[in-house]
Amino acid sequence: MTSPIQLARTYARSYEASSRKGKGTILDSLTEATGWTRDHARHQLRSQSHQIRAGVSLDAVVDRRRIKPKKFSSSAQRALELVWKSSGRPCGKYLEAGMSDCLDSLERHGHLREGRHGYSSSVRKELLGISAATIDRYLRDAKTGDRDDSWLTGTGAGMRASFPRQRMRSLLEPEPGYFLVELLTIKTPTGEDCVTVTFTDVEIGWVQTKTFAPGTQVVDMLAQMVRGVPFVVTGILLPPAVPDSTITTWAEASLIEIHCTSDLRQGPRVPDRTFSGLDLPLGTPHATDAAIIRVNGLWSALADRLNHFMPVKNPVGWRLTPSGVRRREYDQPRTPVSRLLASGILCPEQTRELCEKSQGLDIAGLTARIAELKSTLS
Image (cartoon, rainbow, N blue to C red; front, top):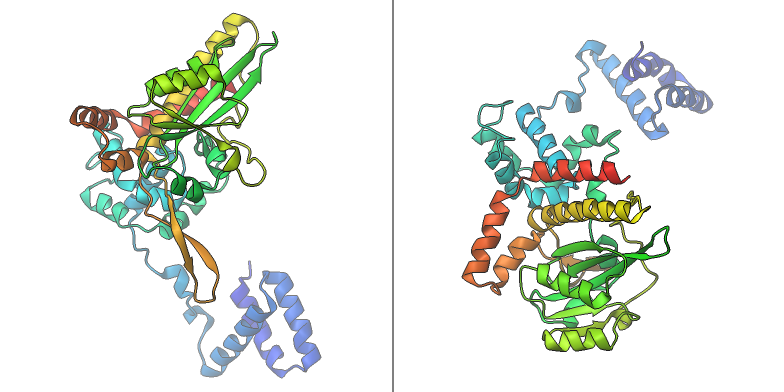
């Protein structure tokens, strides 16, 4: 099979001697055969003409890009793909920020061992020094044809996207404790409402989700969600139609502020990706209860992976580019648990418990559990 360079060498002499119209015909033929643009084809034809006059043989023409040595070893690339799949297939920007935590978890639970499949301390050093752009470039082949969208199932992702977080963070206290509340209602075949509640901390991105059985009162849902948060909840941001006297009384007794999100919402509602690809098999009451148990197991595994291993970034202001365009500025991506520990709101006992839980989590096991539960719910 003739290579594009060989075709360019074949056409080079006739191209140089042709008229303007003839050169156009040659360019048409070459671009159609190789897929090159006309500019690139013209450059290659001229380059081959110079090489012919200089007496350079075709065998001596080397594409330096193809033989350029890679900066990272093949062992590092294999380990990178393992880390990427184990962490839920995030993009390079967030995988770079969470690389250290992911490697620690994989090493603690035996998924990456010294001397196994070429992994070593030098490979770890390579992975910790790899940039986001290089991660995306090395994973390009792995992403081709990969249809696993488990990383898209991020609780609260759509809800966070539907609010101007910079404005919210400027209105609220700059510490963890204020939560956005999202309620999703699923109608069962019996006509009852099965409600899923998502809590998302505005400051640190901590996420908690739970599905409740039909007939559960909203105030009871909120109380259970607040009890499940491992730090003090100081305020909740509810949808406009939710607050009532019962919720207000409970919030006052619990010393929790209630805010309405109607004045913070901008633009149309962005669909929440939390429930994409999930189909609760809600039939008989027994099937409903079993489905709720499974989906709550999924929410728990997702929340652990997001809170302990997936970095988030917060908007910190605006800047002007040299051309005068306003661009949003963000802080460095950090995991919600690291932001929580750095906030200083936890007592020593809470800090110890949270650190022990983080060290005990197996990110590869969480991802496998998420995939297993999703397969039973889809």
